[in-house]
Length: 195
Image (tube, rainbow, N blue to C red; front, side, top):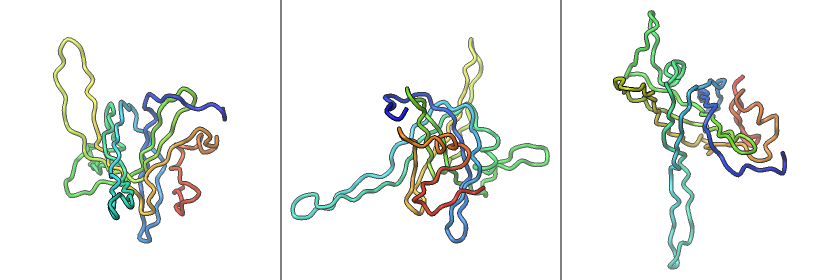
């Protein structure tokens, strides 16, 4: 498979989240990735534009401005685990989910993959925040139409500048197979994954 490369990508699947923890010294760890079943679509636009510094009558220097990504993750239904872990809804004694405006949501890594004609392309966004999904549905008519839920996702850089990672044509088999066991961190990063 070393000489074969993907020509196309399609079909979002295997969406997971892993809670992000930053201690008082700024060390970053992640929880174990948790599946988000029912992925429908993802659309994340790059956030941040390069800007030019002009001198001597031309663009003397271009400043890179990578502020991450913003967009939407559409899923069949937001799982209860995500509502509790990330959106910080509380389960009361009767196992009813209660939303509290005084509680801050949690940041997380978002993992997912696209099918390819040769090999699946696996991604991780390291520092994500999600907004609460809208509440909507409609009455049944001649046919039942499934109503999905959408999370607005903002992915920003970690303090070391890392925004995302994805598998490539020659990613090692060990890294590829372990992608959803723990959040992948490059060997160049002084961050360790939580066991």
